[in-house]
Image (cartoon, rainbow, N blue to C red):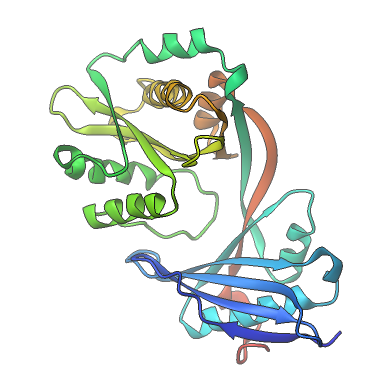
Length: 304
C-alpha cells in the first residue's frame, strides 16, 4: 500500500509544551492514520516527548503506524530528546506494536471507576467528617485562591516521589504561573477544575491536595488528576479524607454525573488501597511504554 506521510502544523502550543503532527494518507488522499508528538518545554522535562499514534482499524498491519513512528522518532531525535513515552491499553494491538518499535514497558497502570449511584454514602460521609488531628479541609473551583497560592505550589513537590516505575519523566517544576495556566487550560476546554486541599492548622500551609476535572455539562464521568500529600504529612489518612470529600462534593454539585475515573501505578499500593476503600472498581490495565532514543537504531531524516 502506498502511503504518504505529511507533516502538519499543530497550533496546540502551551506554556509547557508544543506539538508536532503527521497525517498518513493513501493513494487517493484519504486519511488512514495520524501521529502527534508533544515536546515538553519546561525546565526538568526538556528531554522528553509524548507520542500518540492512531491508525484506522481497517488499515492496520500495512506498516502505516511504523512509518508514522519513524517520522515522530526522527523528529524527537533531531530536537535533542532523550526519551519518548506512549500509553497503550492491555488487550489491544498497541503493546505489540510499540514493542516492535523498540519501546519497553516502564509502568503498569490500573484504571478504576466509582459509579456515583453505587457509592457508599454513609461510609464516605463518615470518612469526610472525621478530620485527622491538626488539619482542616478547604476547596475551590478553578484558580487557587491568592492566599493559598504559594503553599499550594510548594505542595506540588509531593508528586516528585510518586511511584512511576522506570519512566524517564524528569521533574515537573511548578510555579504560580504554571498552576494558573493549567487551571486556565481546563476552563478553556469548558470543564471545571475542583480542588480539595488539606491545610496544616499550625501554619495555614497546604499539606496535600486532590484534583477532580468535571465535564462542563455535569454529565458523564469526571476524572481525577493529581492526588498527593507532602512526605512530612503522610501517615494521617489525608489522601483518603480529601478524596472522600471530593466525591461527596461532586455528587452534590453535579447530581447527573455518572462516575469518577482514576488511575494508579501498580507500584503504588498505598493509593490503590485508598481507592479500594472508597469503592473504586478496576476497569482496565494500561502500560506506559518508553523508547530510549540513545539506545534506538540510528535515525535518519524524518521518514527513515
